[in-house]
Length: 201
Image (tube, rainbow, N blue to C red):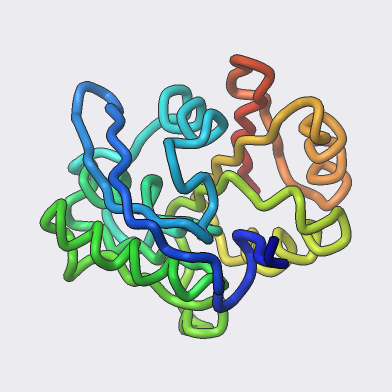
């Protein structure tokens, strides 16, 4: 056994390349994945609920969009595909995840608009029209709160954030915490034990 987690910066787990197939809003995707990244073998159920229930960007969506904790890139690639003039910042601490996201962006023809970067590589002056995340709950509550405090304030004044959290992993308590932090939070949808939260200023 190794000590790797999907939030390990440089995973040593064998890559074992594979492909993950899924559909969102009538569009089919086949993305490259590998061991050592989040939900390597399939589209994570929470991510699937998020992409099914949240309001996807459209061809009219412009500006910068943020995918926090990109994994191999399913959220970032779907955002880029649906918003062909937007720039997607796909942030992950995991080097292998960033490489996969970049490769998958090329696969869907969005290699020039998806920026697979580490957290410190996002320019400080960029604000986001939309923030999307299936946040890494397992890093712990304190670290999760720090993560959200880092990125949510970068939401544009009229921007919207979309989060998915399993109820049994604290989805309802996270909603209360966000409200206490001063955010407007609506439980947009619930499905298969997951909460989809819509976050605005």
